[in-house]
Length: 233
Image 1 (tube, rainbow, N blue to C red):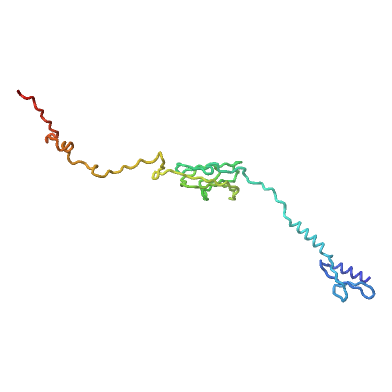
Image 2: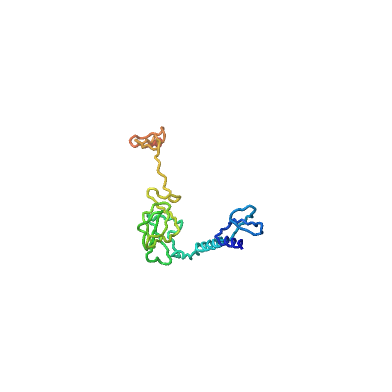
């Protein structure tokens, strides 16, 4: 009876997993239990007590801290938001630095939302508001990138378009375009040598026709020989 009461008392105590109990039988055949080692006792490990409630608590804690199922993402506020002019890779030629930018928004821009246009990473102050068509001026030659952004009333960025890259080309008066049909004519070259010198005097007929020609100095013409007349009888 005593052994049974001792065993029940020990089991009623809060015992954790891995609690050590010593068991032995005396000379009268009575079984004893103790939490201290006794000569001739057998060591026992008890796995009862608060371990089950601890598991229940842990399970409850895990269930209470488990992440909630994610809510459905409503997605962007606008189904379509893009820059359709200029198109990707457009070459804008001889417009005097003027570039038209047109934006497509579907559905229409909601109240409190504003459109902001960025050129090469910088905000274009004149292209801010609810308008979707802009005309940019004084755009330098070269490659540029434009992007549009929609902000809400608090200034939070809601949505943005894909970047569009385009180039500006402008003919210059100082450096006009050249080609096979536009190549300028060759420049005249000055003549050199004695053939290009002006004569200071008119050459004589004799000088032009030979030294054996008789020339009248007053007329610079050759003297015609007088034909002999018929002989008199």
